[in-house]
Image 1: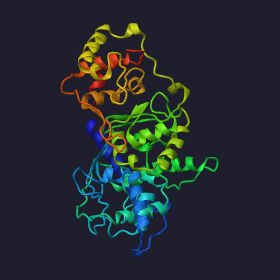
Image 2: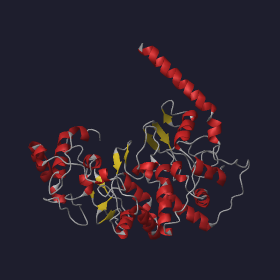
Image 3: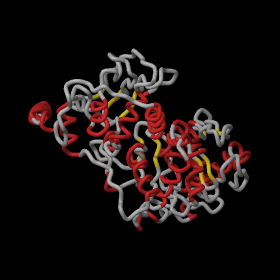
Image 4: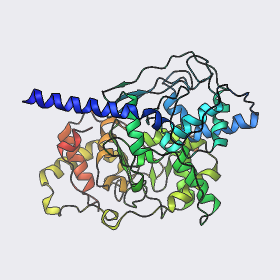
Amino acid sequence: MKLRHLGWTVLALLLLLGAAAAGVVALNLRGEDPLPAASEAFQSTPQQVERGRYLALAGNCAGCHTTRGGQPYAGGLPIETPFGTVYSSNLTPDAQAGIGSWSSAHFWRAMHNGRSKDGRLLYPAFPYPNFTQVTREDSDAIYAYLRSVPAAAVPNQPHRLRFPYDTQAALAVWRALSFQPETFRPDAGKPAEWNRGAYLVGGLGHCIACHGSRDSLGATQTKLGLSGGLIAAENWYAPSLTDPHEAGVADWPTAEVVALLKTGTAPRGSVMGPMAEVVFRSTQYLSDADLAAMASYLKDLPGAPAASARPAAAPAPGRRDAAAMARGARIYDQRCAYCHGDQGQGQPGAFPALAGNRAVTMARPTNLIQVIAHGGYLPATAGNPRPYGMPPFGQELDASDVAAVLTYIRGSWGNDAAPVTQLDTMRR
């Protein structure tokens, strides 16, 4: 009976894919104008190339399209997804391996509608659902810059995705359900600075790719906005940018938001994990005017719903396991107090305070577990060239140790967050 049931399931899936395949061509052409058969004679100016370099930094293009120690923009970086591994493509002007034979219209179509030169649908690991908002002018500038980087004859690697996610038919169905080309439309009721910030955050910055939740097919749930999301492949949680108890900055001075994006550290917080990479490769190079625009937009985000705006209900002190608290106190005294202080007060300019730190008391302890296991490192930036870091303790503390010390930290010095369990720590 199980085999018969499996057979019917496979047959139904094949029929579904067959029907989807029949609609691939129509879905490919949705919202598209035919491209000219011949490439245009694209002429760029030094100013356009420099603008493209800046915009490529704003989009953190090298972060995905450059491997460690590899040639810039030559692709080949593995991007893990719940459906398999996608490899970034070669964006250098090599005629065979890269985009040397692409026209600016081909490049614009990839940015705006997620299609390659040959018409294939691209996987949304390339964040065209966000880049679709980028203007043609900015797309042409990025194209001009990429034509100026050294060509690299590095062949593109085939993706390693499970069936049926490795088919164009599956991508066509995904696009029909989850993607529609868009054009950024400024809000006439908002100042120019706010609109510039909305364009950078929603388009090139593609912040929702990490700070948004995803549905079962991997599409960002745009209606929920920047309400936080788990970066599944890395097991980091990108906190909500709307919730003041996570990473909302509505009550921050603009200068502090700019400092965080420029240097990786500010009086009320610092960046670690994937966000440290974003600051290191991207936002530290943006102009103060653009960072202030992003701050204007982020500070004006709608607040979290009342139910989630409140801190997670913590157990009464009597419900905290006394043995776990005592064990955590001993570990903290041995491993943590030298830097973070006996009372979790930290050292200004060096080691963050743990008392009253919203990164410590967030409902999800995911990032704390990652920092203890793998270390916590701020990015080295022009404004903070020699940042302090926290060494990893994953080889010294077992799951019960990590749970105990985090339970202690989250329940001491006025902190009142839920305990951490061994099950939590095993998900690292």
